[in-house]
Amino acid sequence: MGNLFDSIQKAAFGVVTDTFGYDATWQPSDGSDYQTGKCLFKEPTKQHELGDVEYTPYTYLAEYHKPAFDGLFEAVASGKDETITINQIDYYVRKVDAIWDGQSFRAILSKIT
Image 1 (cartoon, rainbow, N blue to C red):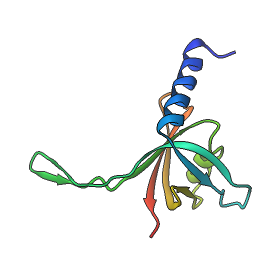
Image 2: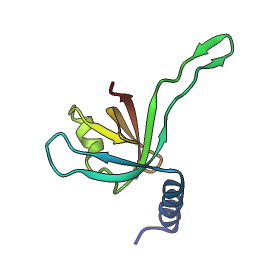
Image 3: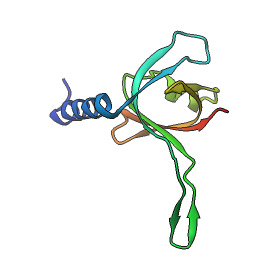
Image 4: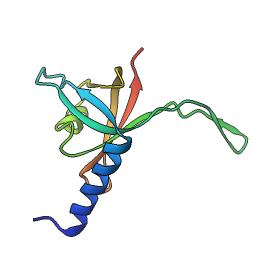
């Protein structure tokens, strides 16, 4: 049995993801079955100015929590080319980091054109 924090965190992430999350699909490059799940998604839409420097955040991010996309972290870390589909748009997964407690992941994406 996990501790109280783990249970609360899982429930809170689930509520936020169910409310604000996007449906996503990943088919592992090894050809195994598609996996579907919810993720929080950041799609940059405009440029910002930081001080006197123009900052263009063209970095797409998807955050997800276990058990969604089981094996994506390991596949990307081992150098496999993986793609994920969000809102019917394909993204190349450049990197996946384990964040916070190791149960949550942040994928850095590039839009495939």
